[in-house]
Length: 639
Image (cartoon, rainbow, N blue to C red; front, side, top):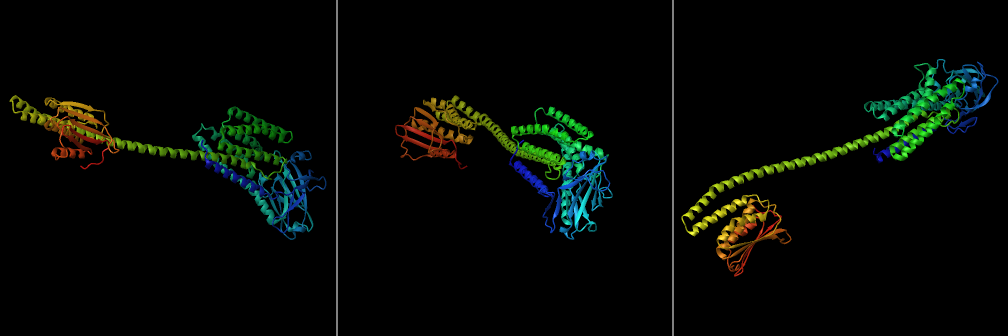
């Protein structure tokens, strides 16, 4: 796949946008950089502070009222209290937590209480009186654990000095048991903090899940049309499992038994990781991909079974989740090696997306098991979004490349069609010329036959009759010259293809008998000459008539005993051409003393008609040279 600068820029923009979103989400944490003290206050734009409790008194006493004794200091948030509660109480397991605050700094302001997460069923007491019950007409469903708590503190229940908030929290396995960070402060500030928590913890996972649903449906449609492209199938599996995994972050009800739904939601963590790695084996074309996938699905089963065994024994589930670390390290190394080998930008983007999803998953694991508070909210819901965005970028780039290829093909096809059309037009023009030339040839042949069978036959008959009757030599010579003129005219109609040497050869053939009869030797000094592309029957006739006239003059007036014909390539004033000369060994004449007659004027006119140059040189006793220079490329000549 071709990767150009557009894809790299697009990927960088998406990565920057993702970084900004994550940074914004983290910065929205109301207790971000709270300092970790037992009770820390942070300015919030209000005249009074917001109290952030990251410690509380914890008691595991099995009492229906707030215990008087058995309290110990505990850190918040803490979601690992289930095992400790089981050692103190019967099912349902639970604990008590309390914090105290002074009303005086807030004056008469309306106050409110917020806790980002309480797991699972809880009751809130203010100064020993019931303030809030999670499942007593409150509208919260079974899976409202991820919904932040916001409760206004009625002024009638508050004391002027020290006030106490107590939580009674209970749960049934396999749910976790724990309490998040507690905040008390002005109503507007606490409400704003609770709204931000709700947006981050509930609304954003819903938005991401909606986007994943759309992309998963699209990927499934691709896979339905291209079942052999397994990368779409594995990505669709990632989308389906991730959608189910995200459901418990915002769902308040379950179509099945709550315990079964919770177990399946927790087990889906292993399925999500396995599906992502199976997709990676196909996307990166890893070696021995099938073996890797079978191994990962086998380990997934082992991890799920190990988790349930640990739960049945009342032990922490953490070892089951730690089993995912070796296969994660192995897959990260394999993907990194594939990226280094291919050096493809889409591979690096996908590697970064899967790595980010893994980091988010391990962050949530440390957060859930109270190892590391981190961002203070769950990041795993956004991991699937990162993977699908990376795939979307690669697919978009691939589609863009395909469109560019189609455009290139269309341009090439258009150019090819234009070439073929031009070739066809030229072929059609050549065919038309051939048709015309064929018609001209047929007409020329017809004229030649008519001349030969008509005038030529009559002249032959007249010449034979004159000889038979012993007519005067002048009559016989006239008839013989007329017949030669006719034959030369017919020869000019023959196509010569620009061959001047062949044209001169036909003249020699027609006049050599007459020259022998007159006792004149014919000397042939004709060399090979380039063809004249412009030479047509009319031009051929002009050339033949010029040399016929020159030979006739040599026979009639010069008393020549030899006639020499010369032909060779010769340049004239930088122009390529052919020089033809007729040289007789006759008496010659004084060219300056003798005024030119019609014969020389006609020859000069014929030379001009073909774009050539005519000259005649002669002196007494040295003979006469008639020269005709013909250009290879002829300028336009008047019709």
